[in-house]
Image (cartoon, rainbow, N blue to C red; front, side, top):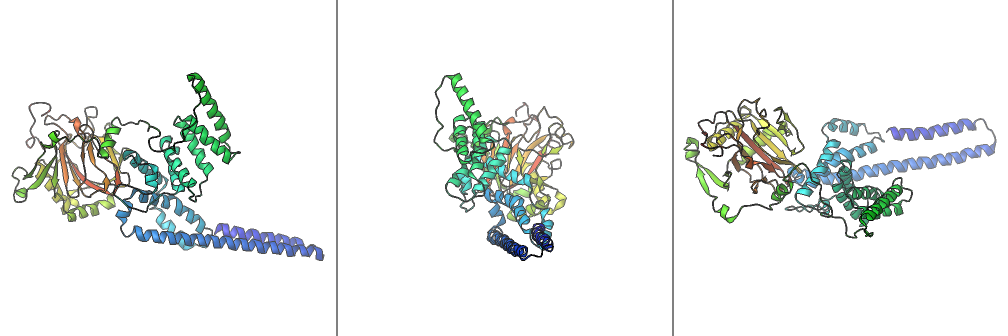
Length: 537
């Protein structure tokens, strides 16, 4: 509205000034000038009307597009958001594109819309959320070895979808990586943006903008010949580009210096398009990154025939527990050493729904316990939202706690609360130990219940693709199955940590992963799990 009024005010101000000035003159000749002035004002008025109509047409186009989109998305919200591209684009729409629409509507009398926007804005994702969603796509891209085109076209394992990324979307993905000095992903996404633009897709992003980011990112990846070739393309498109000329001279000088030092002849840049595998992904903080990600893809699992022959299934009555005598649990071996078991039909669909209902209002960014202070804090290697539920919250929680005690034979009186976690787009928990190590003796000191002796993990949803629980040390992968639970000991009977139990929650590729877990502590288990004769019993 401010812009509209300022435009009208400018027109009227000009008109007023011209008329005021004209009143000084009485000649017809001078008055005829006012006729031409009036004609210009009419033309300006028509341009204003045309601008308003263009704005209105844009708003109508937005409304039609979003009306169709929301009809589809609200039919099955969780299923729609199960596709990571849809989740990313929701973040982007609400953080960026709705703001653009708001700016457009602000140019008109739109008090009702702005008021509505103001009410709902507090619930909108912010720039950090949009950036996080973009990084989640890159995380999935790395873990499951998917090229940018697969994401751009919505081609993900186990899902047929019309979700797609535009030239501008891919460009924004590349910028997110670039701004984080992540030139590896910046190259992949800028290249995809360029590929789609060259294919004729319409976009607000220009080829010069893409080549500017792409050429410098390729240079940062150490590929000088290709950086020179891309920069030459940029100079050809925009000879007056502020940085391109200087970059080109610098790249050429640097390349020929390297060739002289190595006594090598110049080799032109490869004509092969940049794709996944063209450049090596930089190493990061995680030593077992390759093993972990391979297991997430279902590769490198060390379940040999000999090992498989040692895995059995059985009925388990919790050591003659009265509550399990008439209906014992179905127990399956997932791994022999360390012993990991899966229990079937642990939670009913009704119980799962109730747990999720209780948890949803309390979900917050999941935390980890700082090994030095024992205080809960967020961490980049754990991306999910979680809530903690007490037995007093609902009879279902009390019943689940009792069931865990019955199945394991361990008291849950000293266990932590039932933690419910939801892993959305790219949600993960990188390799970690559940127990505290010797170099972090104060991790659970505040609880006063000793170390985490065991983990009981409930799967409360099926996951279409990704989301496995993997153990990189011995090459095991356990896939979520709704209603089942897995259980393992983190400590030997001596109280020493079993370092083989380092595990991870793989990123969710397609779907929404719900789990709940109970971390059972040492105190109270003295007679339920007596100490062994050796350190590793």
